Length: 232
Image (tube, rainbow, N blue to C red; front, side, top):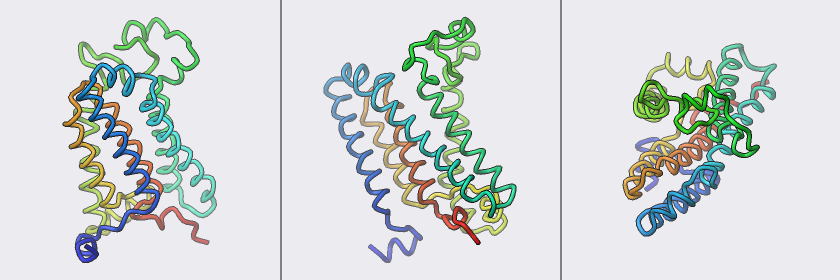
């Protein structure tokens, strides 16, 4: 087993990663069970809007944002401008993602959407990912095309190029882009395939949680972890 891991440069999962994958395994096991035995319960309770799955996803995205802000502050005096730009960019992107996931707290604080969002948002909520472009929801357009392409590049193509091409490695490190461990990529593929065993239109909610967990683990333990350490 160790020789196999060394051959493909696969590091053993850390304790935190094992906990993350175990958590997802439990969530998926329950999701597969409920979606096949009581799809109504799965859709209206287990994977519903404003439920545990959605809030857990938002919390993970928020944790990634806070981690990026923390690194930015901690390493501000010892990192170049491009590193700061990249780290700040990730902090803002994941903060935006967390806000969008829960419609910026609209249902939590029970405030009404403006007339614009009522007319142009598929769920009449204050968020961008459910906005409509003609008859197409932005979320569907982004997820089906842009996000899928991004995930393939980030989880498969970039790790290969980072290990093989010096220029890509230098550029990636300059902008403080966390590079995935191969265990992260494998986990993403496994949990994506397992969605096929949840026969419900709500299974993307489970997949979003898986993405949240995996990205959180990537940011905690990236392959290029030295980029996020102080160099005094």
